[in-house]
Length: 156
Image (cartoon, rainbow, N blue to C red; front, top):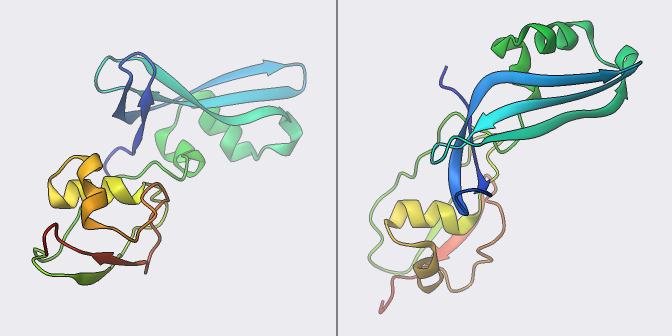
């Protein structure tokens, strides 16, 4: 299985970059309270981003299998803790749009990505140019499975 990738804005690069999961976690315990993070590394600059999994939770409230996975950095045991936006892969498939068309989106479970990002990849254009293709869409919203979007080619 491919390593999950989380597309987030890197503070050091100041760009939206893919952050592949390192397969590791960081844990901090203070008495009976636990903090835990999953570690993602920016592909551009190498900065490590920590995604919080637990914040000041009682150790007794965490499943033993999860504690073992956190302690041993077991990637398969940590996989259920990945954020919803971390997906192994995604692609845009479909015919070329040359006239106004309604498109129905088929989205993998767990994908949280903006509509304009999906169409920018599919159309091969910058995100700013997507608004001309999708005049009625709310571009900053995450895509949903089964969502219908009217695509109107510029000048068409």
